Image 1 (cartoon, rainbow, N blue to C red):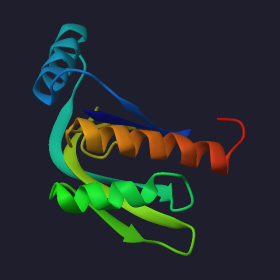
Image 2: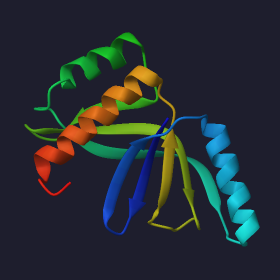
Image 3: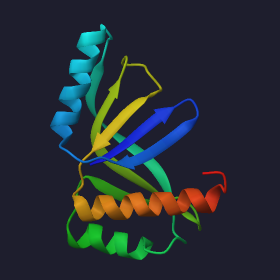
Length: 128
């Protein structure tokens, strides 16, 4: 599963083991125990990937061959594409700009997306 964390400082993507259902259930349990409001809803998230990182063509091919309907790739310009995924948004309120987005795409696709995102971050910013 992929977890995208949106904060005031930007986006962080990571691979998480376990099921989507267990992650959401654990987060709901934590919110109940600490008395925090929690909002969970089906949603979409998007992030940029560089088309110049090694392996990008393989991702496109894999998404097409495995018929991954919960992920779409759209060109942005000559250097980047927007990757859009379906999943669940988890935040403190309906209007929150910070929160967590989780999606399950299958191990191989998640691996490629994660590695390409890491490579894009290194390409865009030497501080990451």
